[in-house]
Amino acid sequence: MKYVFLIVFSCTSFLGYSQKNSLSVGANSDLLLESPAYDFFYGFQAKYGLKDRNYILGNIGYSTANITFIGADYSYDLINFNKIFKAYTNAGVGAEFYSEKWKQSETRIKETYIPLNVQIGIELAIAKKLQIYAGYKAKYYIDEDVFDPNYLNFGVRYKLR
Image (cartoon, rainbow, N blue to C red; front, top):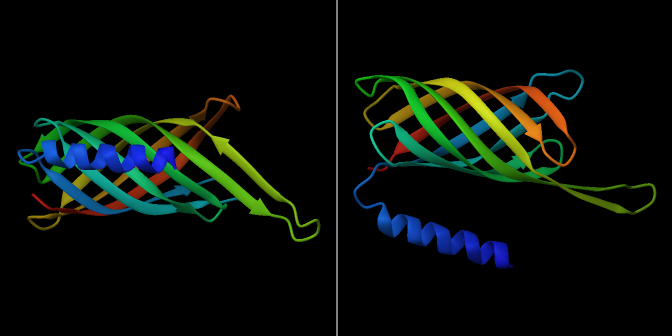
């Protein structure tokens, strides 16, 4: 419950401050490009512009591997052509909550993982307020000491202001 309160408090404080800066919302996806899993992550994303080339991304969602995730990234535009085409990089941290119930023994397994991630990608404005993006993401799981480099990240965002 304390996490829910912290998230709601942060979002309301954040939105009160953000009256001058850009704000976008959209859907995002991560696809693990390794066989045999090909896990698919999907969810909601918010993008908050700090300055001309800096912004913060917040993500929340679910995956086909029974993982619920939440995360935040700091992003920087490496290339910005008139706000139509961008090449970006970002780094962030998240929390992944794994939960699965085994039918044979009726036991429930719950695990929490903390991944650090880096990404490089491109973004294209296809309309004045609509953006599509795709990138390559790598994750490092701190607790497990595992590097997972093969994620394709893609999605669409709508610019609110």
